[in-house]
Length: 225
Image 1 (cartoon, one colour):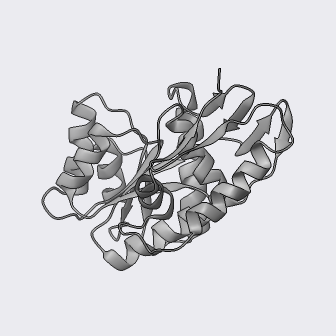
Image 2 (cartoon, rainbow, N blue to C red):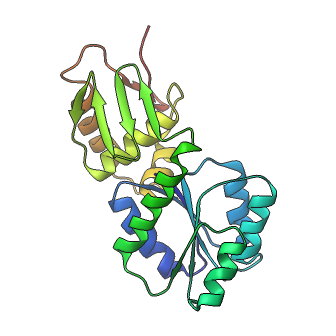
Image 3 (tube, rainbow, N blue to C red):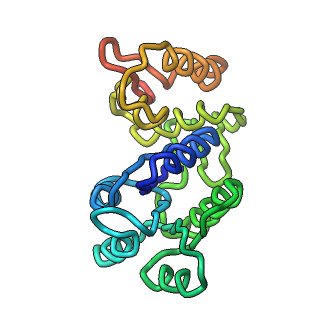
C-alpha cells in the first residue's frame, strides 16, 4: 500500500514509518497539518494515518477539508485522546477508524489493511499490471504468466512503486525517497542490489524483459514493442 502518515512527533513517525516499510508498504510522511493536506490532495494514496493533534491544522480539520474536497481517502485517526467521545468526534469529522495511543503495531497494520479492503470497491488502484506481470495490493501477491513470484517486503514495495509509474523513468532519488524513506543519497548500492534481485525474479525465467535500466537516468518498467 501507499500510505500517507501525518504525525508531528518525529520519534513516533519514524517508528510507524519503519514498521510499515519493513512490511513492504510505501510511506510518505508529513509533520504538519497543511503539509499533510497538500500531500493528500495532490498525490495518490491507498490509506492515511492522521494524528489528531497537529501544528498548523489539527487532524480533524484536515480530514474535514479532505471530505469537503470530495476526497474519499480512507483515514485512520491516531491519537492520545482515546475517550469514547473523542472517538465519536473523530468519526463524525470524516475519519474511517480511530486508534488510541499507545497501540500495538500489529493492530495498526491490521486496521489499515481492513480500511484498504473496505475501500477496494471504490478504489481503482488495488492491482497493477504490465504485460503478464500482475501485483495485487490486497492479497499482496505477484504473478507473471500465471506463476506466483515470492518477493521480500522491500522488493514488493519497489515493484509496486515501479508499477505505479509504469512506462515512466523512475530515478534513484525517487526510489530512495518513496521506497526507502531517505531524503538524501546514502551513497550505497542498496538500489542496485534490490533492482538486481527483483530483475532475477520477474524477468529471468520469462520471455521478454520488463525491467529496464535507462542509462544516466534510472529505471523503467514496461513491455518493449
